[in-house]
Length: 449
Picture 1 (cartoon, rainbow, N blue to C red):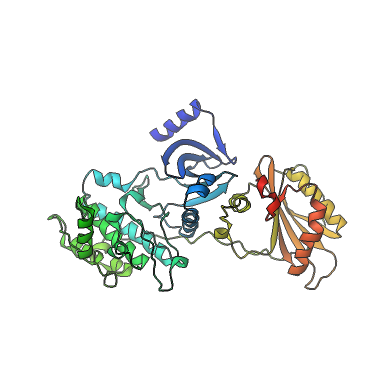
Picture 2 (picture 1 turned 60 degrees about the vertical axis):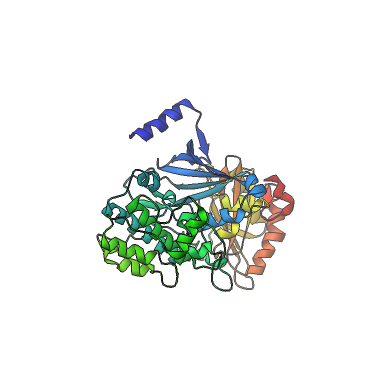
């Protein structure tokens, strides 16, 4: 057990345990922003350390950039790469959103730079990892737009992790001219085309920021600096800077191609990766793709089974972020998690999972549907007569959100969509009214959550 883990254990001994959704234990605060706080956490099942970003929904709705928070979460789910901080899970309650992220314990790269310039080989390693991460972002249509040493973290192995996608941009933010127009980022690292308040290519702007970062790693100071901000801007617009005498000719050659004022003439990432200085010791990391979309269940023959057994293990935990946030007016984040799913319906219940399954079995019998237990807390209901497109079959899953709250989700497995909609509206709702707390999308029930 290292010193940090011993400190966390001591804190746990001195304070009541704060357990989140039965999955994570939250510990000390690591940092704080305008609308969020970040805490150290631990996965109770695996023992893995995590960072938990807690966003106050009410505060954001009143004062904050909701779109920016939605975009940050959406982007982090999209870009899964060894050199990018991983978003592991998103959950929510009525008042808060919890983003469970990879815990990067080595601190900011900025802290290293404050101690002085880096050895060229070390700087090259970080630059290679940065470019690899940025390249992957660009391949997914994402521009970071706020690359700087403060947003580059180091893990326990000394590997770089890009963080803070709050100012990132997705393709849908492009205007008709195919460019971005939002002025954002940190002035000392921002490309001149952004400072000029004109349309810009987000990927090209990121490459400029990479050039500034490489210069800073090797020099321990910024290439464009002046006490007067406007004078600094004029230097940026002219590309006016000087290399320290200790820079190698190869590094100077690369930086001079990165810090080109005209974005059209600026070096591209493929060209960076072919550069001899960059190539030394470079191994391209294996990137992961975004979280896989839910696949349609294969149709199965429905077989009558025994009643649900009281010996079942507890129901699966439900990542309630999409459901609960969509039920909370003014903070609907559900769109970023939509995938090509079958038609479905969903409700919450304060009944136990066993009571819900028993009620479902009773309803199936009354509606002349077959009822089969596919696996624990997942059942299939199948109509015994043919419909317009064969027999209608519906899969129902029960999830636990909290000890006193369950989510029940219906999805069509086979049959006609219109027949399924009629089944949900005219058959299921009346049959289950005794156990339903709130149906998804019912405006009259939203105030309850």
